[in-house]
Amino acid sequence: MTMKVREPLISELSAPGRRGVRFPESDVPASPMPKELLRADLPLPEVSEVDVVRHYTRLSHFNHAVDIDFYPLGSCTMKYNPKINEALSRLPGFANLHPLQPAETVQGALRLMYELQEALQEITGFAACSLQPAAGAHGELTGVHMIWAYHYDRGDTHRNKILVPDSAHGTNPASSAMSGFRVVEIPSDARGNIDLAALKAECDDTVAGLMLTNPNTLGLFEEHLLEVIETVHAAGGLVYGDGANLNALLGIAKPGELGFDVMHLNLHKTFATPHGGGGPGSGPVVCAPHLADFLPGPVVVVKEEATDDLPPFFGLETPAKSIGRVRSFHGHFGVMVKAFAYILMLGAGGLRQVAEDAVLNANYLRARLQETYHIPYNRICMHEFVAEGRWKDAPDIHALDIAKRLMDFGFHPPTNYFPLIVHEALMIEPTETESKETLDAFTEAMLQIAEEARANPEVLHSAPHATPFGRVDEVKAAKELVLTWE
Ligand SMILES: *Cc1c(COP(=O)(O)O)cnc(C)c1O
Image (tube, rainbow, N blue to C red; front, side):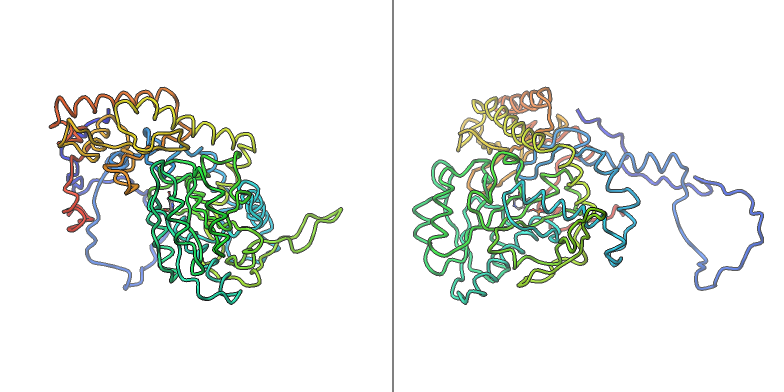
């Protein structure tokens, strides 16, 4: 259980004259400061070193983190990120580069980017890659722009709609709409697949494409995937793959070979960059040959092939019909270093093991919870599954109460109220980095909460009890946001 933090949580720590550091007497003559830089009064806190260390250490524990405990936030892939990737991305040879340096002085960095492009193409079965987009949603926007550019280039300018399943991440319709398309929602069928009949009814000559997440946000593999893709292609549309959740497919299936035309990846989900604190992330876009010319540039290419004496010379190039630049300079290079190190360290076999363990862990939790929690689309899942946080015999209990109560056990809650097609959704993604002991502890907490829901619902309604702050009024917090403690 999370330790209760002693009151007062935030008190005035400053006391006049208290110091953290004392400088020795100066042994050089004082030189006058420019008057503009001097202030008569500078009310900084006066605190000792230990006050400062404790203050920030205490603050750091107010938030949950994957380094503290289990973080099964569905669709977000909050896996543990090996610290060596951080150390490598901070190597001075990487961290101190300037993006405007001439290519001959940054061959190592360009080679890393080139080989990462190649690795991501190999993992996903696509022919080309751009590392520019800064995150998943940005990759989507990029890919949908590429779909637009593809049709426009062919003179096929009457295609004005993008189809999006009702289980999709909210960024999918947003990216389509921001690219100027009309968004048409396609319902899911009783097994959690995209409804084929509804899809076929919308596949006319105005369809520009379909945005498809596979496995979808229910954690399920599309059972009619090939037929779905063929249907859209037959109508002249392209298929966009939302690859934010690639964890279940690594080393097992290649979306490029399944017929997808373009896809983004979330390096900050699948490829071990910490996230949740607002970035930086990276959302590379990979695509089939017919879209390669439209990729945002520049991308890294081999300018001069290797010879017997010399390694290849890498440079930057903008594809022929590029939609243009989508990010300043070259994207988030530090994230690329981490992803590259992670891929090299795991190798092909290790990546496959990631996927197998992620799927095994999710199915283990699903199997242990399915008798207690209703799972509306209950079949073998991929990296995650979605349960309902409600029971007929506990009518006042909502998914939110279960989520808040889980915090008392030291766990981060699952994703709540998404996907929208499941009532009181609890979307649980354990990831491959969790041990059986952790999964069992989480299961026990979930089972205890289900009992409390009937026997003592008040303990759920008033949860969390063991965190530094109790239940907040979420409406008030959103409407009257206070970002400072004063
Ligand atoms: C996380 C996620 C996204 C968006 O990624 P960001 O990096 O947060 O922009 C898109 N689709 C799915 C399915 C996701 O899980």
